[in-house]
Image (cartoon, rainbow, N blue to C red; front, side, top):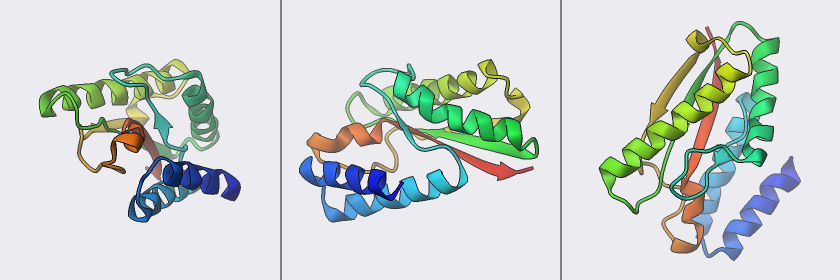
Amino acid sequence: MRLLVLGLLWGVVLAGCSTKNADKIRACEGSNVKNCSPVIYFLPDSDEITPYGKKRLDWSVEKMNRWPNKRMLITAYAYEWGGDEYNMDLSRRRARSVGRYFVQNGIDPRRIRVRYLGNANPICLEPECQKLNRRAIVEMYNL
């Protein structure tokens, strides 16, 4: 796991992001791996979960099935281009797409909350690494 985070950080450094942004990514990845599924990323202008994203979400499906007293909060984001209204809608579609994935895999929809924040809270503002802002985070918590 540590190597995965270090690899991600190295990729961010190579992409031209500052250390400050790399720290945000490390903190985000660490907290989510510990308590919920890893962060998943989306292609530009898409709410479709990639095959790799599905593999990462399957970990949470397994945990949610094992721990019936857990609920989840899905928070989705977009990045700056396209305007505020567009990005809010795109992040809403991303959050709902992730929620649907859990429901399709047997998770009771009453255990799922979604939140979408558009282009708020960017991880990186540099053009080379803005792809990291196209993300959804799944946090698990007790009922």
